[in-house]
Image (cartoon, rainbow, N blue to C red; front, side, top):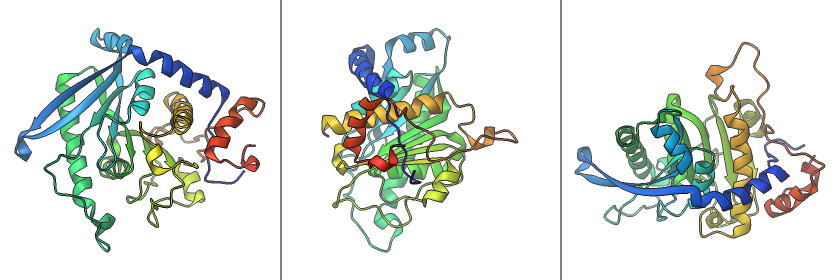
Length: 303
């Protein structure tokens, strides 16, 4: 099997998508606006998605909810990734989707030669939004684990995700990006990374962002090359793209959340191997081939 490409889809994962579609009515969404006094009362709006039964258990002190922070792409609203938020929420996460830009913010301008082609200020603003929102959430909804975050982001939100994880690795449990283009992947191997890549000529990843397959294998990074367009990776994308991403994401979460060695600093002296192929499928389950076809995975890579 060729390195650097993860094969993630199984019949079980495909069935799970149907479960999430049916169970989304048990997921509660709530929008809260926090005002940041350190930044002239800048409004930071968040959408919270949580499964109702898990919320009741957390409120009763029975469990502590894992937390996923969801970061939107440039000019896309924070509410336009419900297909991702509902996957995490259905798995028992408290999902916090943050609105990073405001109509009053200056436009983002590409500047060749500057860090991240001139996007550093917007990325750092996103990091500040996350830190502030998480601090507020600790008070507003204390029955969740804000010390070990799963960071998720699409496009510019993926760059914010990766930059935050680089600045605060001790606060990260997992990272999931969808077509982040500017900020290089973290290769220290302290947490697992899943990244979906588009096949879109209008959105080219900068050189050096995606590590080589050998580095991916050593660092526990899973890269999924798809045939989807960059803008398919949000609620307005095709149902085929969204359901395929949901299936693979669910498989990743199922394995990562059950893995006691999900962080390098928790490994024993004889850790099990960590590779880019941690998520596999049963070759006897032919129904998964539809999802592979949608992703454009060559037959020779399907084991």
